Length: 89
Image (cartoon, helix red, strand yellow):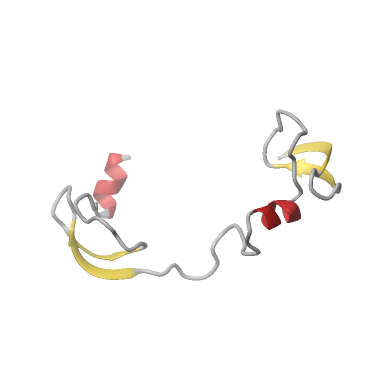
């Protein structure tokens, strides 16, 4: 965290800590103004359990069966199991 004495460009509140070192003071926003600007009052990180999608897919790398994914795939031609996904990174 970077310590400083900046002003929020939205509401004029004092900002004393940022997770990055700003290049300029233009456009800096406090946490509240930043959340309002995102158009959502939801927290930045999801809370609770992640929704899982059930299916009968095959890994495009090794052919292993995939039965659950944290997203609903639009295209199944390049799905990878967790092991193939990790090794491709």
